Amino acid sequence: MKVDVRQSSLQDSGAALVAVGLYAGDSLPAEVAEAPGAADAKGSFKTMTRLYPGGGPERLLVVGLGERDAFDVEKLRVLGALVAGEAAKVEATSLAWALPECEDEAAAAEAIVTGTILGAYRFDRFKGEREENEEKPRLSSLTVLGPAELAGAAETARVYSEAANRARDLQETPANFAKPEDLAARAEEIAAGLDKVTVEVLDGDAIRAKGMGGLAAVSQGGPVDPRLIVLRYAGGGDGPTLGFVGKGVTFDTGGISLKPGAGMAEMKFDMSGAAAVLEGFAAIAELGLPVDLIGVVPSTENMPSGTAVKPGDVITQYNGKTVEVNNTDAEGRLILADALAYAVEQGAERVVDLATLTGAVLIALGSTYAAVISNDDELAAEVAAAGEESGELVWRLPLHPEYKEMMKGTVADLSNLASKREAGTITAASFLEEFVGDTPWAHVDIAGTAWDVNRAYTGKGGSGYGVRLLVQLVRDLAGRG
Ligand code: BES
Ligand code: MN
Ligand code: ZN
Image 1: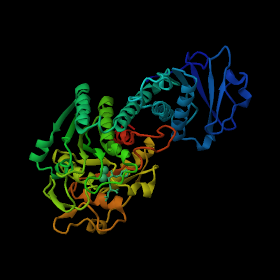
Image 2 (image 1 turned 180 degrees about the horizontal axis):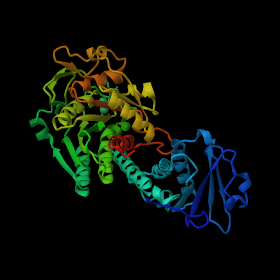
Image 3 (image 1 turned 60 degrees about the vertical axis):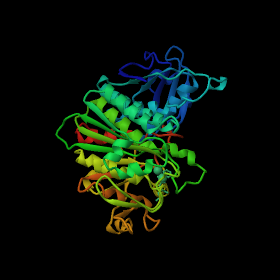
């Protein structure tokens, strides 16, 4: 989407649809107050009134902002998406949005751009050319009507929102088209297209030769070769080197501990952490943020077969710890263990991992908050703050030696399956903690937020969750606000 910021009257914007916000109890700006029907426009949140002023903009959309005191950027993201929906209805290809009066105009401009771009997203790669699927004209340009100094904020939002939509493409792409080698190809494309970015890809032989026993074990049940993808970005700055790790299981059948058939198709989304890390990384490099960054994505299918890892098998992880694989469906932690140890060894001084790790997080937090679990109060607080700012919310859950105790093995150092079912999200994180040493680390369990979140701007299907969170985290750490 083409995005720009321009100071212009509603009349002269030139857009096919012009959106103007109205707070509850306020009156419309004089330039449109006389339009036929204007008296019916309401300021209650999400109320939309379409006007045809004649002489002014072709179509004017009055957007209810709700109470002035209760206004925030999340409401504006939602409205951005609803307005994008209205634009689709009238087949408008250009949209202008008059920046509402508010405290933080830069944040408001970002929210409008984000809501519009995410709200306009569709995944139709596999839709045929039948008549009902006929290509409708799409919204292709957004003008924020406001002070030109907001152009930087709008551009930043465009970059991370389009990155989030690319992550959604990766998520939505079915497992027969999105294999570990395809995620690696995307990483290679990212590195080829951006300054200061390099990539390294390990295949199955290299993974086994390096002793990454978790990734090797999960991949051995199927014919698809795994990958360990490593992106590096030398953006500089004075901060610590950050490491982002994303779970890239391109399909999770559960393996020998097979999942039930109902809903299994959703497990194409089990690479959502990888999608967020790849595209979040790309956005950070595209924005040129001053940080040194390592992105590590372990990627494999999890399949049952005669060669698959079996319940009770013992494996050795990259850091030398031994693990009893007591449930082959707890595969995410096995591949993340190797990747976390590798990220730390490669110089990451603070690590954030994103993973669709446990069904339990859906029970705990639904699709509103992801869980963050961390060995470091400062990093946990930074992740939570980035969540509030970006709208990709995270809620901290605790660690405790009693949870760690539940992950001890009988014949090996650790078990990948807790001795009790309760606190499943935390016990999974306690397992991961064994692989980061003393490095500050935050694990974000996105199994509830990665798809079907039903927010106006993400709706059904892949949400791209994590891209905006990671970008915001780096912006905050790099001191750019
Ligand atoms: N990918 C799943 C987690 C998941 C489940 C994500 C449902 C989204 C929706 C993960 O690999 C898994 O199977 N976890 C198990 C762990 C258990 C066997 C300890 C789970 O949560 O049931
Ligand atoms: Mn699983
Ligand atoms: Zn999984």
